[in-house]
Length: 288
Image 1: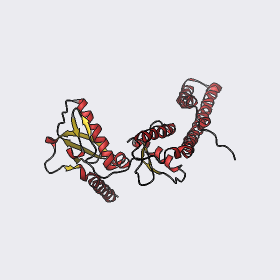
Image 2 (image 1 turned 180 degrees about the vertical axis):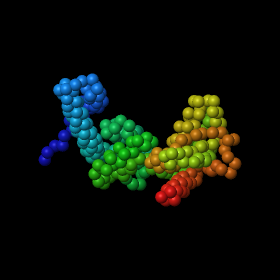
Image 3 (image 1 turned 90 degrees about the vertical axis):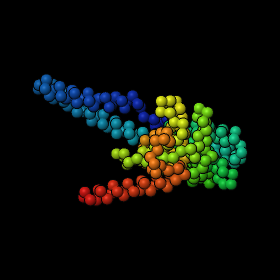
Image 4 (image 1 turned 135 degrees about the vertical axis):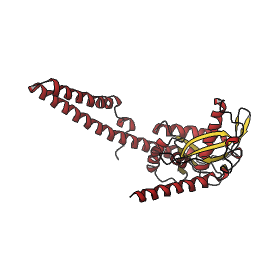
């Protein structure tokens, strides 16, 4: 059986790629110079040489893109090979073994980061079923495709539930965070949606007591809690693909009759997105 090449052996050369990219405009500049400043065989030689450089650079870039794809795919395979060799060490931890769970998250997280340093993981032990491994982009929607690619390479898992991106959870008031002596809970917030932006994403404004727009540190804490809470209630993919800007304002600025408790945001988010999607489709059909 042939051993597959390691990902390091497939790593494309960054220097060669940069050189290929830079050579293309340089070659075009040389062609322009030759056309307007040179004559005869010298002009033909410079133009011909420049064309050859451009073609070689394009060939190299195409080859590099193919190697990047092979490199990425091999890194995905290496992670699952590593997981198959080590998952038994962490599959049977107790839901009360916090030290073991932290170690599992650190060790598996380090392996996930070998695929891409921007990827992270969460490990959960429900106590009455398979342990869960959540592969997450930590809310970075640009990285969702990388998570999906890694999941697509996953072999069948007998002992684990593997989840792509943080899932949506039911509303709970158990989430709490201390900010400057204030205990924040989802129960302290209401929200309202704005009109969709150019990408069709819904901006959201959260309202709560104690917000001081002039206190940037405190406002940053409110924003951090808002991001964590919304990702928990909406799901990482739904939030990344469907939610626009997030603002936090004092409760005194909440529109009368136009703000709602966070307990209903998931259902409201889905129905509002569906409404605007249907509206946009109807407008496009009318224009056609």
